[in-house]
Image (cartoon, rainbow, N blue to C red; front, side):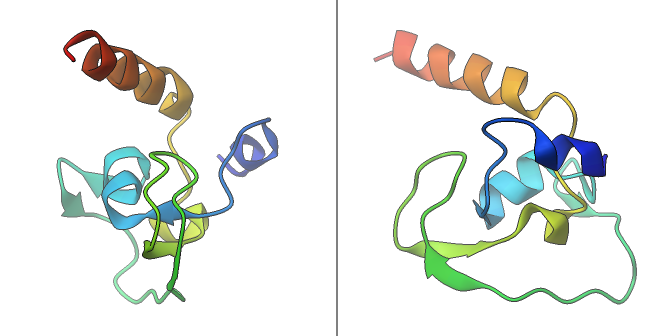
Length: 84
């Protein structure tokens, strides 16, 4: 899973919504990670959805992103664009 962070395009920071959608530590919106974990959040830009001025943190704080994050993200993005 950590090897994923070395892939081109792996975001430096993600927003909470993307972290919940693509992180290993969330399943169907429910946190399943370690019982005691903390993260440092700041206001920035999400490296996945592109949202600006939102609370972001490193993907590791969501257990890193699932292996299929790029495929799933771009599939959702193209579906949204097709429906515009």
